[in-house]
Image (cartoon, rainbow, N blue to C red; front, top):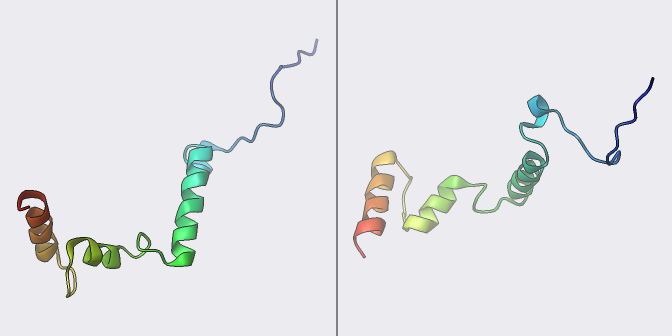
Length: 75
């Protein structure tokens, strides 16, 4: 006896191992792909940190921590 499973046969299923968690990961991957291809500030983290914390030189960890502290606690 053959049982038919009712449901939408047009759904798009992705394996968990391949794309982690389904459509959310596909959207996230597409967003990251657009950011990397367009070279937005989110794709270039160093540039983003320089703009956000108003740093002129390279971003060593010590300078970043000091800038974050100043922005959070000194207003």
